[in-house]
Image 1: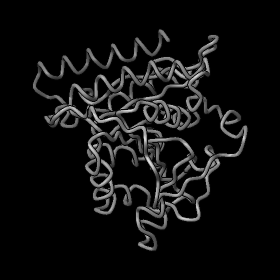
Image 2: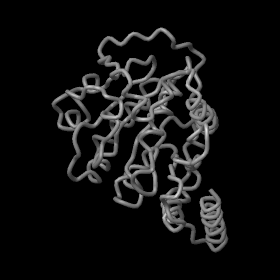
Image 3: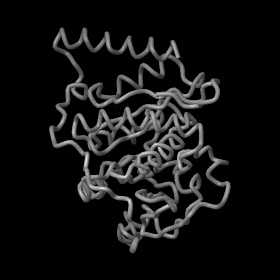
Length: 278
């Protein structure tokens, strides 16, 4: 934990010095859009999915994959409710509706965090959540949830399926998932394409109560996440306890615009009873 704090503080000090010298990196100086808050007072409890497939995960499959937020009574799910409160507060203050979740390196647990956070947000009666698997080299959301992927993002991008055909409701009100079935070649170019830009805009703008969460690849393995981040409002970075060096954390923070970074999550901490901290 102390190593993460030191890395974040070091990057903040570097950026402060750069700003005083006038050589602040372009991506750290991006102006954020000003728009109306995303809060919608309309209650959304009674949602019926007509075109979207509904597929409940097999019994016990979610717990096996550390997905806990679907159960309101699960003690470990409380950590994601706290995270949800912090994230939505910051997003509403800035009029943000799209959130990227990434990590410095693989195996940090970012996909598990993304799924649990999306489920927690969907439990609010004035919000809906969409979870999108944009980790095109190693897609995991579908297998983690145990949902069918007869049609997926692969088919949507190949124009062999419409958006409504690839979305899946995992048996939980106010949550839909856009899975990726198989790894894609040229993933960075795909994420930079006009098709992806149009998809993000469609998902974001269709309902003002909607929060869209994108599971992105790790920052230091490929340039995929960096290619996509300019199109997304804000970012959460997941750091696995004891699995990242101080240099890796610092390098990742340098790649992210500080204004858009909501926070850093320490995952896989050896602390009971809660395993995830904001």
